[in-house]
Image (cartoon, rainbow, N blue to C red):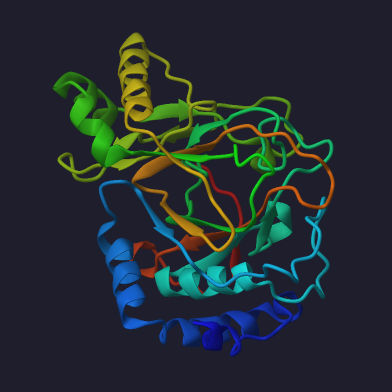
Length: 307
């Protein structure tokens, strides 16, 4: 796999289309066993709603200080960014969102001074359970998180709750309610801009698709059930997701693939030291070509349209 990294341009952000084209080509040459696991996860998911890859070569000695702001466009490719591209391109199409970090494909995820409490840049509080962009018509199918550096105390965890493990804990009545009636949902501040009114601006199907194996649209902070029955059913689902939650403590050289249609995720709080060695992850959003309503390409930047 180290040889595959060597086939990628060393400065990805200066010509992202060329970089993603090279990554797509290289992704077809991943080891057969790894490729088979990724292909199966893309098509079928799994019971736990995530895939954790361990033992990837990373920048153990050459890694620069954890940044506190946006990366320079001339920053050279880091090892975990390379694996993010290779794994992401095997799963589908790396996607940017115009209103989120200027449409960037690569996101550095680290503590940022002055970041809003409920954002990826803050470490102060629990970032509560959500499926990424549940209110967005073009929400990603997978969320990838690659770890270059863990937090000092190894406290930070990514929590994942799988709908396949949670739904069997619901009553038939609660499941039927959530399948039948979409729930009003506010829109995250990143996508509504300066609008003072947070909505609700979208109606999100919380459970949808195959009634026996439904997909999930969930955001504990933003869903606003508007009937007593919806509140009861959503509370039951929230409790079920809490009951099946699994904690993933990402370490350097590990990459987490979250099935964004089959699970919800969160991040626990931790304390940064601002010493250049704080937690540093890299994030990429992936859409699956076979599940899109129209043509798309790797590196596409889409604008916000509510569901």
